[in-house]
Amino acid sequence: MDLDPASLIVGVIVSSIGFGLFLFGKKQARALQLCAGVVLMALPLVVPAALFQAAAAGAVLVGTWWLARSA
Image (cartoon, rainbow, N blue to C red; front, side, top):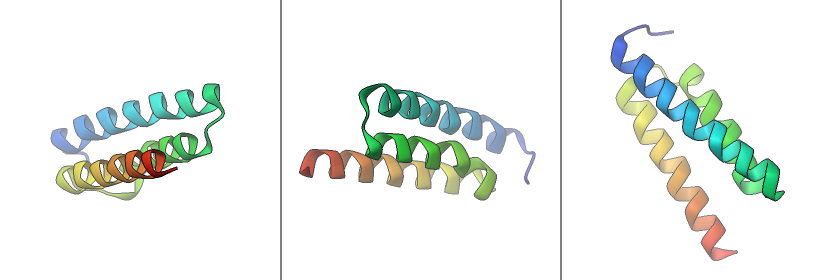
């Protein structure tokens, strides 16, 4: 686990977005948003670098948006 300030700040932001998406998916009973929220909350534990965290979070969010629009 990397403890540089950029990684910690990006991790908190990504996890916060994931928590919000998780709560939205739970309240609206939408499995896609619920799962995407769990992935975003766990992402900072798996991806150590801030740039890769931000890129992976962007990919998850764009993929969630695309799948929700196509359904």
